[in-house]
Image 1 (tube, helix red, strand yellow):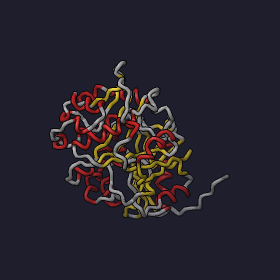
Image 2: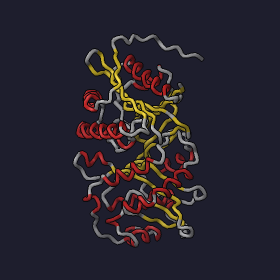
Image 3: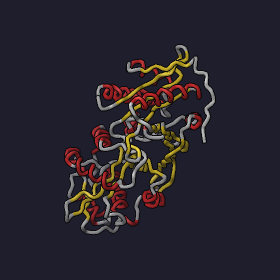
Image 4: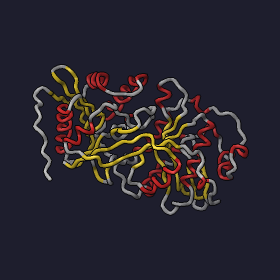
Length: 384
């Protein structure tokens, strides 16, 4: 089947490749949609900071494009070849932060992105991939527009026609992702754990010591090839988020672990840790006999709340990993149970599992029975 695109008059639309941060900021201030206006300026500031760093990094090939109709800004997109991003384990180009006032504008912006990628010998493109992921998330939202913004999750104008525009340009909805509210606080499978499994938390310094172990665990546990993988650099993005948490967050009241939970593993974890010095959104599981990291849950604090001047009460449960050979032993469920209980001590009472790929049957069968779907996103795909 040959797709025939309708002829588009683009004579009034002018696209410029722009590396001047002031001009990019002007475009974002003119067109960027953010559901919560109170944090819009902060998001723009953070994105400008990110772009400034990437312009100086020779590993990144990046092309910001602004569309004008005469002097009026009518669209914006960032084409990018991130050295850490892969799709199904292969090199892939992306576009992100796309907005367009019309199909004509979308057509001209995407065409320029495709030219940029082909010039760099990239033959596959996906979007929206809004780097950095913590700030913009992956995908174009099509469900859950009334939900509160969450750090690390993509947000899209409910009036947007981007999915329709991109479909006309030959892009297909290749990957569907769900976000789920963790409605069930305690999962039964996580209450009875083999005594050879030990749970720990670490300080920020100790987490950096575990970086290589976490990377190796990611390689091992993500044996199903993922459509959108941020690579080893993603771990450091979590750590940067932890380091951005206000110090006041770590003040907790004294509590009795034995009254707080009847699970011996959890009581042992709390009794052997200085809870005011740990990073509570990163519970880890170890095989005692091997002293080997075999599971970790990495949650993102909702820094959007701090940008509004509020306390952190929400967590994006972004990544969970369990080593092959330890599946079906309740370790993921136990990490969830321990993680929620510990985070509760620090005032976090809302947990949302995000970016759950619809084709990941193991994740779907493990997570969905305990949760409620509240948002959905599509990542679109095209071969050039």
